[in-house]
Length: 336
Image (tube, rainbow, N blue to C red; front, side, top):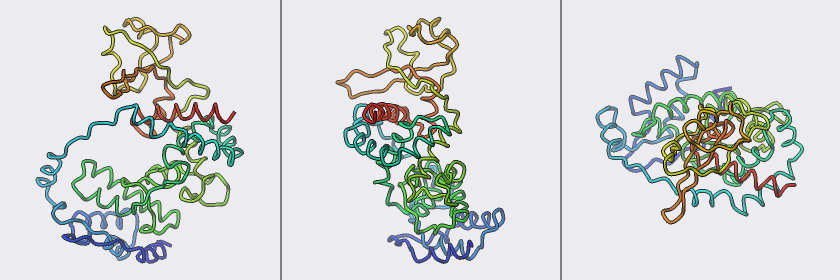
């Protein structure tokens, strides 16, 4: 089966850039191919065939740790987009309108997923809305090429991308997919829910019962897979997500922007001097996050619960989790 998939996929060849060589010319790629053959019983010739379709820029790729460290050192971090701008990208009229339409079309399966996995329907729909606008924008970058370039280039998370490339090759073999034909985000996320390769293998499910898992063209499998993903990260049924709050100047440092995992109980926060609503039980673990706006707009501080942290397991950015929460609330209001 592997042979059929890989031979078919060579017809989807990737253009070779100037000042570049086939990835198979590089020692690191050769070593990766050797490992895939040894550990996962892939056919060497077939792997060489598909890897030869991907080119790596010679100036950017050197098999020396010194050069890679040099390239990483000059990389500058981009300033995060302010929360008010980020929110407007996803929590807007278009996403709500499209989400309500999607929800109505697939309401039976969405309700089924909610009942089976105890994940609210609006959360499932909101994640689909943020990731791909309900399947309208799944990405146009060849996934195999994206992962190969990032795995063997001078990218900061090269080990992560090597692991994802390994998962990708296993994924296409398991699901009988042509590796060079698959497209997704620039970083290798795929399908309706934008799963990375390891998530596809661990959390994607056949939710419509047709005997195969398809997150590329099947919205029903995607609905079930998102619900399964959230549930497997320990979503609490009927649990709260977040509440906007105010913190006096003396205690603002207790609500750092990077904190989202609740490890301190409401009682202990109160003992630290934080004003927490009496409706929240003392033994409830909560946390605080800071969402920064543009300089002319006041920043937001939020009290967050375990389910907010679960949303950050889908995407670790607090802005993402908050956008999913707020879009879900608007979808729920409109759908009813």
